Image 1: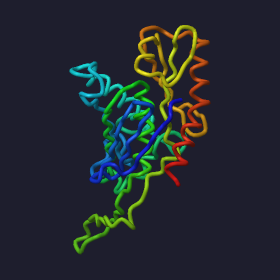
Image 2: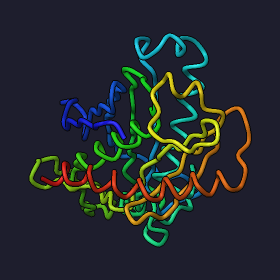
Image 3: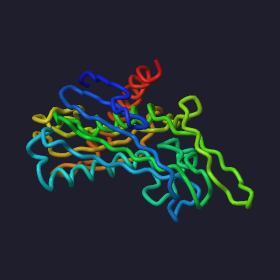
Image 4: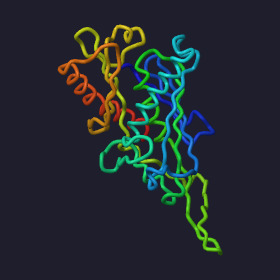
Length: 257
């Protein structure tokens, strides 16, 4: 894969942020946290939402509706990797080993929780943008600090929230189960990864595979103009399972130093 360059804390107003270069592909991710209400389908969990947008400078093809649609597709793939149960709840990252344990974001069951908003901006797309956004998201979430909240009871017996936003009391999300989304593409009879934008135009099909640090597959999405036969599908999965943990550990070495 192409060299990866990573910067943290690039957005001062964000709870966490990261900028990542993968070759000439350039993405920036910011994380915002707010106190809100759990969804009705998951009253014992916090909430997470991902958006992906393309800068007009990223590539001429992203001007107009195509850029919006492709951004929504990438956001859905990243969000599914972070919260495997899907929007509305039901995910259990603590038992599946994939994604974020959204129950850690709960403050008051059915009433109050932390809402995590992940906003990605693609500044330049020279291929493999899904993996670049996924890796930058992992880094930004690792950089995120969430204020400490305590539930207290007032004189009338009502529950209130006390927010301590001092840096020393903030806590980090556990990103140990967050997978990376790797794209394996078919060019002719070959399975290849980390294609440039020019190389991607030669690919007939592809597979976005979410793989955690243990090599466990957490989700799969197909892409491309043609279907994938069973032997190529197996090769794509095996390739992603081999490379995913390697890239994950490389990122963690930088993030924990």
